[in-house]
Image (tube, rainbow, N blue to C red; front, side, top):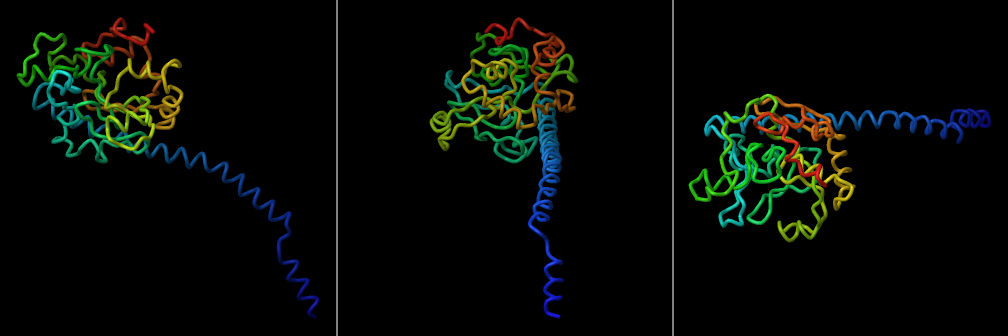
Length: 284
């Protein structure tokens, strides 16, 4: 009788081969499910980011409604005055500071830090300040040095100092305002020296959405470009969340957004012209 019970117990168990087959099946199922779960997570992060961009765009629209002009990106501290950035101007309208959740894309892995008199902010989102002209530009929404004229601090002889009025944007529904900042390589010594942060190399946005800087930074000859391109891919799988001056948002292929074709270039400039001759990366 005891022998029969022992035999039944042995027959009720699993053999090593059976266990290995079960584990193999579980591994196969996991390999099939994990990409779907990862994609679902990435989609959720992108939707949250898109909502952030929409809210920031709404705050920008409210600012423009009150002042009838767009905020400047910053003021160059070399002239001697305090550095003030575009996001500070819309803080009362979005009820959020640069380092708060609204300005933080959940898929962004770079540094988030306020700017100072020596360096630009680092963070998730960027402003179309320059259009297709890198510097001293009147083509985007807020070329540098404008603060001097707006606030009566002199400097009117500097080229490109006129504030961008709301009426200057000829096609608001096709004019980029704010979106995922293009990424740059920030060496650890720079993060430590300029921002007094941990000496850790990052791939971060500089509160700017700029076609020239993006294409230069992703060129093969640019320092850190492989890491920049990889970080850009993992943020939204090479897609970009962008809002336009009329308030609508789009999720675009990153390569499509930054391509040097006339239809894409028009979206950067307030006069809705391509101005391809102003691009710097095509001259490299």
